[in-house]
Length: 334
Ligand code: GDP
Ligand code: CA
Image (cartoon, rainbow, N blue to C red):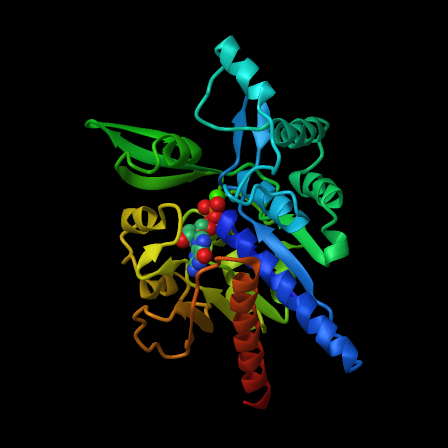
């Protein structure tokens, strides 16, 4: 089965790790019956969070996907490497190098050095991500990770800093200010001129199922949807599109998706998020306790949506795949 997913960082990566876990369990059970159907997963990662720090290109969402799926993630943080040291950052701080609000560990730095070296030689980001994916063994897991675009795209936030309006990088707003500086709007530099990376549109068109993990609907999935051609591909694909709400009890499980939704004038609820995808969404998983009014053409399934463990994420992913398969079967007989 070919599944294509659009993903941001932590929420997307944890869900997709659950999907791989679920697929392994199902494949093991099916092998016993001689009927294995292996998962081929294509992940389209958000690059709007990308930033240049100390002269190095950093791709936070892509790296969170690599480290989580490849088994090198710092579990407690949800980002960065496990068993990290910070000698480089300490020395940079001693030198007075800026910025000091973005934490980068030594092993993580190696990723950024290598990526910047290859980009500097003229290699497109998608080819760089392929190299990094090999390091993390994604191919052996049946995973192909694609950046949404090879063109540099950066999400910026126009903030009101005591009556003074200015645009700052999304990471500065999110990490340094913890989304507490009042945001007027998001401006995504380079997005309208971006072209989808090789394979992105085909992966959506040729999938058996398209999945939207519980990633941030505004600054993760919303950015990918803004790459010219992606939204049309989602509207046109034969595959059902099934999404998972990032809100539980009307609040984000982590991060500040509620602030992001408010900034773009969308209700902070699972219904509000589904509304952002209404032109292509077929199935929607919401938490058991969340209100979700009926919507024509949208099949809603209620499930506990807390990814408290890999197994819990695998259950959510299993329910997502089941819903997708049900929608596919219904279409085949329609
Ligand atoms: P980021 O780029 O690291 O911010 O990660 P994503 O954009 O992929 O995901 C962030 C979103 O994941 C947030 O809006 C969270 O509410 C959501 N999220 C994180 N953990 C969970 C969880 O356990 N369950 C659900 N339903 N959503 C979650
Ligand atoms: Ca992100």
